[in-house]
Image (tube, rainbow, N blue to C red; front, top):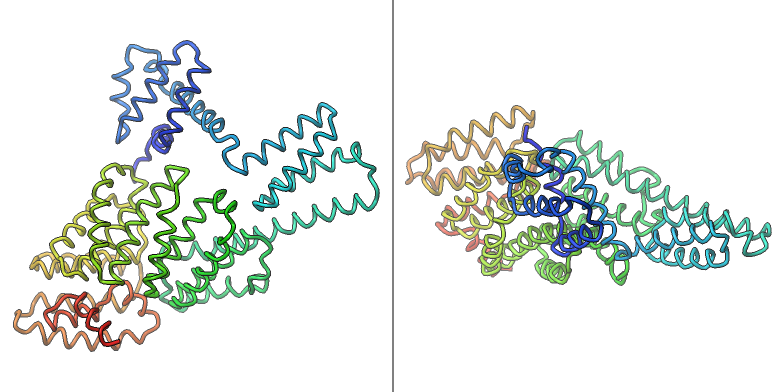
Length: 507
């Protein structure tokens, strides 16, 4: 089991440059004896690419930091969090609402009810605009506690406040229902990209067919509508209906259109929505939509380092997708070049999943392009990654693509050991996948066949895979890697890209 990185190290590494500068100013304002040592500890940790406690203890051995190292780290951690809270005050609309609520509470305590009432109304207006319902509920409760000191509390006004409170509570409950349905469906997609058994389909159908989840109109807020669309999109992804998946993701994007305040306030969720839509556009071969979405993502100026990291990996993957759809590999080469320039700075384990996904996409694109030397480099990069939790489909795919690369690079001695490894994994996971088994049979056959007889093997397995493609539980595997086109390309002694180009010319 991998050792978790130090929490202080991870916090410091997550900070943006502006946040680090602010922390040092913050620390200087609240300086106490020995405070400069804490800034030195901050700088020393910040300079490390991998957390090394022994090196830090040696560096500070003549200071109290070394003597009370654990307490010093906790002190620094808490003060970084305090500085980040101060740094973010008023920067987000959510924080403005919270600040106004605190202002109103102070005014109420001082008996300044009219002033407090005006502040609460201002806060409620903003909260409604950004659909910040939990804060709205608190504001209504605060308002109810002193409104009688501002206006005459009639039965009509009392009923009006109760009605508003009930409506907000109902919306929050509605949000929770749609969110938890989405989380339940999303949980099923963590291990698989698509359902490959009747049992999987039954579990999905039970969730998506709940009476209260049957229509978008039943969702009572922007947040609930997004969860409804995302849950349905995942459902259709898992069941292999990529057109319906794309339609729901297109609806998600349209829900954000024109909502500048919500986009700014929920920048990460808006970005993830666009990324998800781009991936779906690729699955549906919608190159123009993919390009438009990439432009929208490039226009985003990330407010946090974590979003900056997400966009870095996603934009490179999407650029590669666009290259595969258009067969304009200049986009792919540019994406690889950009990726290789910056990837060395992403050393932490938290980037492993994103790296694996990007490498796998680059591997697939290299095979389509026919550049097997580059494909072998991506195989090696995937192999070097830490063995963290991997989605089963991605793990199978990376190993199957490695078989293709080993074969084309004439590393035939590696094929049998890799076949055994894949077989063991399938048996361990108890997944009787026909596509993977047929794939293994193909490359075992090729391994033991003279080169001049390869064409016979290609033809025979082309027919077998075409027959297998009619199985609805195996269709998605063909989309992960187009083995039919690869076999056709081998028969014609061409690249997959050349076959796709011919097909486009005949449309």
